[in-house]
Structures are given as C-alpha cells and as structure tokens.
Image (cartoon, rainbow, N blue to C red; front, side, top):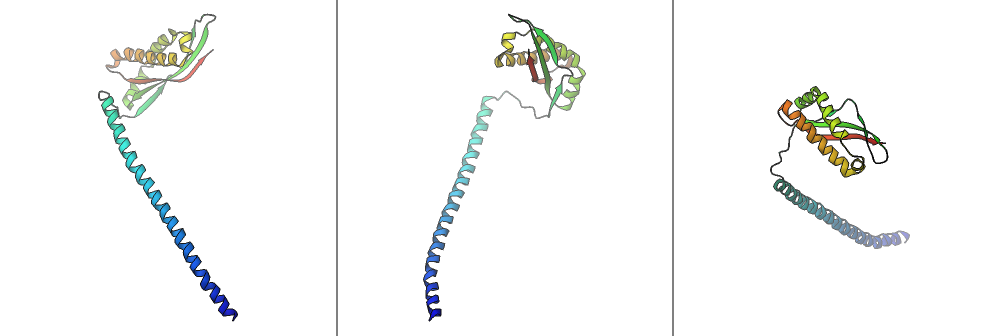
Length: 174
C-alpha cells in the first residue's frame, strides 16, 4: 500500500516538472532569439555606419594623402631652456621636443641636421609671449609655428618637408 502511494505521488509530480521544463525552455529560447537579434543589429548597423563614415572622410579630405610609412619620433638631445619677458617679471620656460617623421631614411636625415633644427626651434620659442603660452591655444599656436619654421628651415637643405609634427613632451613655465 505504501508503495502504491509513493508511485501515485511520483506520477503527480511528473506533470509539474514537465510544465516547468517547458516554461524554462521557452524562456531560454526567447533569450537566445533576443541575443541573436541584438548581435545581428549591431553587426549590420555598425558596418553601415563605418561605410558612411569612411565615405564622409574620403569626401571631406580628398587632397590629403596619408603616408603609410612607419612613424619615427626623434627627440631633441636637450630641452630648450629660455627666458621670456613678462609684464611683472620674466619667466623661465623649459620645453622638451620630439619630431615626428615618416620612414627610416627621414629618421637618419633628421638626426643629421639636429643643430639646424635646434636653432630654428629656439628662435621660434624665444619669440613667444608669456600670456599666449599660459593658454592651451597659445601652446598649440607655438607648436604650429615651430613646425612651419622647422619645415621652412629644412626645405632648402633636404629638398622636401621631412618633419610631419612637432610634439611637446614637456612644458614647464616658472
């Protein structure tokens, strides 16, 4: 009799387990479908956004040629240390500079002309203004002027623009 009661209890428990199994399977299936839909959405729309962005940049700057050669950074051997006159007192400025060039041959060429570059940079830096160098826009302007001055100084010697960017790796004004 006890065996029959336990079998009846097991038979009654089986349908509940089947219902739970079906519910969990349905929830799992829905989750899988949602995740698949999100992945497809991200892949499709991200790819189309990248294509749109690449065509926009291609149409915005068609004249600019991107140099695919490896970038080399040539550090100046010493930081530039100079005084700038100010309204109330003069300021001592120290700037550490690196130049970005493309390709190994330009790297060697720049290292060959470091004294000429140092002269051009020191001339540019010492003509600065304390008020301008106190702001970020003034530092960017000085960086741009330094690039132009270095390129113009090296153009007659090398026959082309070798330096791509002038980078300030240290800037202290006291």
